Length: 305
Image (cartoon, rainbow, N blue to C red; front, side, top):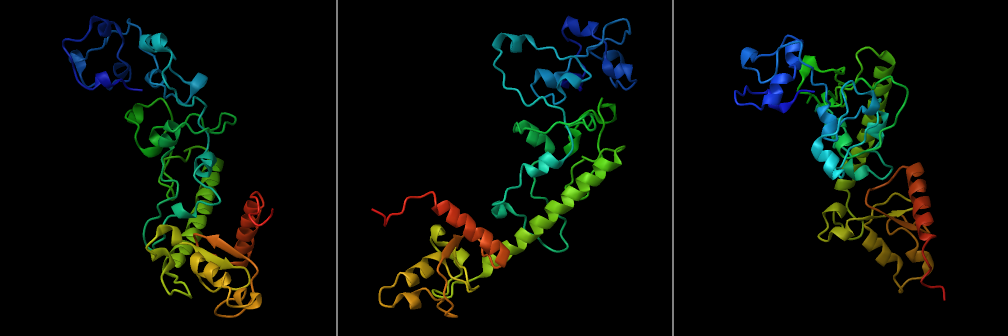
């Protein structure tokens, strides 16, 4: 909660600062001594105004230990953009904010022996700055310092809030030092997302190397970016780019039985599903096809009068 003006001594400070009790002096850690711009007289009132609240960044809201007093400038404009003032809780919402079912493109590249870098590279503090809606619960974790979660708290040991322990998986200082249940829950979530990222990373690595069975080009290395898609056949696992397999199936020189069959194994598939990522697992393929069919069901058929 330190004020930036306290970092250097100032002999020509404004008179009002001499009447404000130095909070560092109260803790016995003021390094400026007699040169301090603030008062070292315990009879003077202490400045307990929350600087983070005045900057629109206090995440503790009504539970903050310091006074929430609006600055004169803020009162005049009343238009300053504020961040969410809800209490800080555990880590589940932080992780889930960055995870979506179609988030494979942002999956972390997995390299054995290299330290894991989580998908949620955004820090807890940056999540707050982006205005994410963090969940609220009974006051179990609302004493964790939001700035220390990424190791950025300038107050160090003098901070009014608790500094968490670092999670070995995500690198955030988010483990409450006295709440074992919260530590276990967060570690379980980290392991879960780490495993999901590994699965997605292996899929991306596999997709990067596959070539089309018709044009023989590596699908992800095609010149035109819009052509870097796979055409997934529902009844076989041979690899084709979407453009080639669609041209094959639209050929007029052959009967319907021939063009509906795979060019390599001759197994018939009545449906081709576009995908930016290669899908081979049967369950995932079914999910992909069902999702694509559901998407098409919302479009008007161009062959229907």
